[in-house]
Image (cartoon, rainbow, N blue to C red; front, side, top):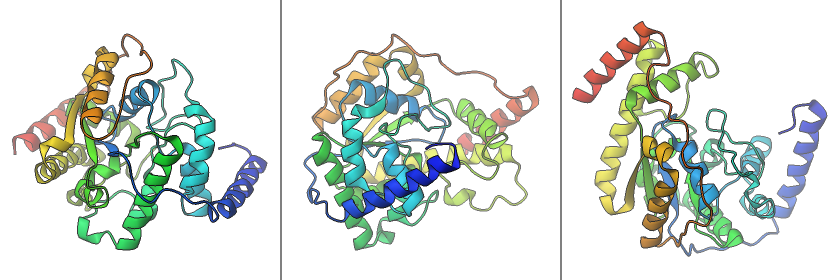
Length: 313
């Protein structure tokens, strides 16, 4: 989005115009392929995994344009923004695998999508049970994904970590949905969230499990440790309910050390489960692995103690 006030005004007027066009657009009403969703706590390596996929494997997706339409209009414009994003060819330059707390540059690039999904789920960060999804909401998100898939002519792929708390709800809307769970050392994930919370996001960042709703009397350090644990616990519970056949586990360390191999694994998983996929571009040999102590020593040891206690429990 443009930084100056006039640029923001131009953006707003453009999306008001697109809103008029959206009303006259007709999209697909049936999905052809299995949609795929990345799930994990925030800061677990999901953005890098998504960037690896978006560069190497042709897919359809909600773009940053779709997210910006949600910001300006209070609702996404999936059809018109998908058409624009397709013309931009993903808007991801070769060798650009950087992000800013999950947000990638380029209007046509894949979006984090919290605000997009919040429009249908009526909740930005929290869990949603299948029975809480109303028919009109389900129809809206299903048709948005179906239209996006049709415009690109490719299987839909999404990375929005809050959906980690809505796996069964997603399967209610998309019965053939696939999930890629990204795993990272919980201590590394907790440190990354902690650094974000103490610099840019003082209130909360990403998926918020029910167990984390009451934070009174809890330090930020304790909050982030519990967030990591309970998001992963929720995924494990939902994974058991949905069935292992719908999931592929990908480790952040492996994505960093051998991204080409992990892209091949993801493509093979999708291709075998109703989402035709093939690696079409080569990836860098490796990415820098972020691991080890990133905070003060006392904080680091306290995080390790809390996480050990939580995961033992």
